[in-house]
Length: 365
Length: 98
Image 1 (cartoon, each protein chain N blue to C red):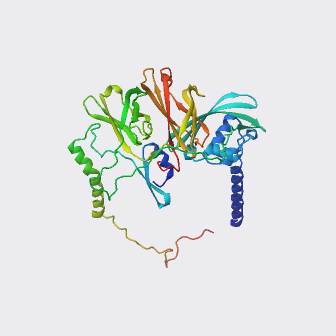
Image 2 (tube, rainbow over the protein chains, first blue to last red; image 1 turned 135 degrees about the vertical axis):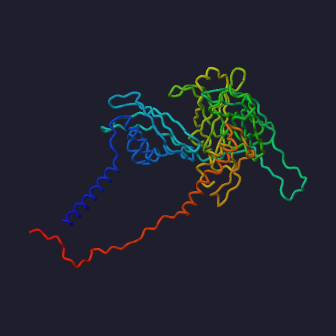
Image 3 (cartoon, rainbow over the protein chains, first blue to last red; image 1 turned 45 degrees about the vertical axis):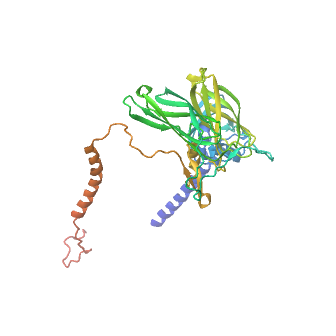
């Protein structure tokens, strides 16, 4: 009796393992357009790239490698520092063999949450719904020599062998050009511009301390990444400091804090901003769109766009920023989009875009 | 910093890489202009007695617990070996039913 039981359990175990293996290697067929999109991104989130690719329609003309690079990033871009967090889908249009699914994708990245909205076309392929993946065109920069004649500032600091009274190099002169406080969405926001008035580069930080009606300090914040920390000579950067949960009526005074430091810097890479315009995105929100063009010969891995919006009087009314999840390859334009508050769009008279950057092989980083 | 994943975050937040060690595996990042720690009068300040209690009661309760454990150790159970099966010379009372 005991031997029979052992044989039965052994057969059962082998059978269950076989069933599990077969079930795990074959993805279920999507029975709805939304299901196909959800399954694709569900597998991508689990890094099951083969499973995710099985939901891509053959008519997409994208190989698995290109598909994976679209989702996982390439060239050391921000996407390569990201993890797919969540996906919300909504069917915009559906017919018997074709549908359009609006997909809002949220990535958790090294610099905070990143959002992307795509309208994906889903088609019925051999009885199952599959996503027609819009393959990104991979850019290959042709072999070439790019002459670079940018300015660069190196610094020789006072050494231990110098005379005791020897003067060290002086810190640069910078100035806060403007400061404007507004209350938006339950937060007090301090914004404005800062300029490097010197002939040497500066490393800057800008902060603010809020004082209440009794003269006590109630909050202190810095601009964090809403600022270009390295300013070349005569360069202007916007700044924005957020104080969540603080009302303007509770604040009597704002004390600005800053720090200017001399640092080695270079004007390379030069990033041009082209074709700037304000328009609506897929979801109907107002955005500032344009293209970034890397004029140098080195790849910029993570571009960071800072946009300053001015009213008729030239006052800064909003500062917004966005990280691009695509690397800037040399001599290759890359689109960008920065959100603008809908309630401010009508008041915007002019705007200015500056670009921060992070490069893996840049010693100034 | 050893994990390069966080490099973009601190680079954009205003930190600067100044030195690298271990063939580039570890990097030193600095942020200039950080003011020294200072007392900030945010919110309601605790009274002197509350401060004394917060400073003594939490750590004091832990020390008291340790002292109680040392002062009153658990009673050790006596080990008693019982032989099994019991050896008995007497005839069993029960008989198998026939």
